[in-house]
Image (cartoon, rainbow, N blue to C red; front, side, top):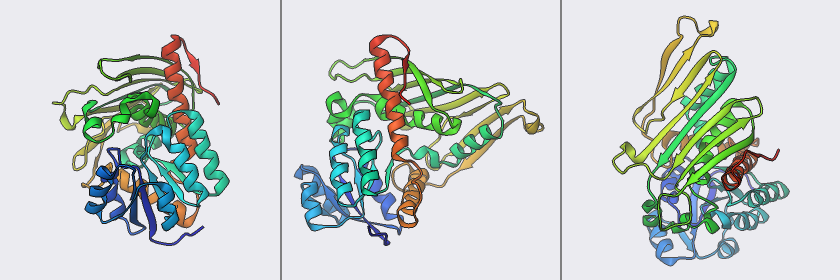
Length: 356
């Protein structure tokens, strides 16, 4: 397997909101060179490739018959990701698969296994781990700022359904292709975040889903309680129904409360100041028991700005130098197992265990 720089990247799947946003991210890093794009729809493929100077291919088979990419950045409908990942992995191509990686855990497990079997790196896009406020959040918990974590809260309300229609991604509203609605597409970010900052796994869930729209089968509001192995209970409020007038079209918030304190963070946006609020009764924080830590990030072009760039940069290091990517396939599988339990809990109106 080649480990040369720059790594040649093929974008696989353009019927998605994120490929145009990832191009500036790749272009900002000398470790990457985007060479091609794959999509069966010429009405999407042709203008995208013309805009970014890429070679177009209607299928993965056509791409791999002519090119030898090092990395496939896969943005296909979730149900189609496992098959594409297997084709790429068998060709020795490393995998960046847009979260949640598959429509169901069976597909995510296939991807993890095929990456391991073929010796390729695998990551999925939980880039919040790379935000400096998130890293401080995790370290403060480890340092005892909240004592023993007791409760957590995560809110992610982003956009309306129309954005998927406008972005050639109507498949997102079809559960047969997407796997589900906002909990699967957005809630996975906070599921991964809490797994990571708490260094703990979800053992059971309770949930209710609601559908405000009348045209599509997916839920557009999802509410879940997650019980972690060490006792923390997390509440998630995830939706596609934030008002158009809401600033930036997204309402984001995470917090952890424990026996000695509280951490809270309402993530800001590129070029704005992020504020992590720390309230702690722990003796180690005497003199700074109630304080705010600020993070002023300069705007960075591309998907998710600074944290997106650092996520992609760290994946390049894992390919070129060895070691695990910042987010692994196992992380993707773990988040999806929680989501599947959420859907089961909603159907059966009971607490549902999450598989080990």
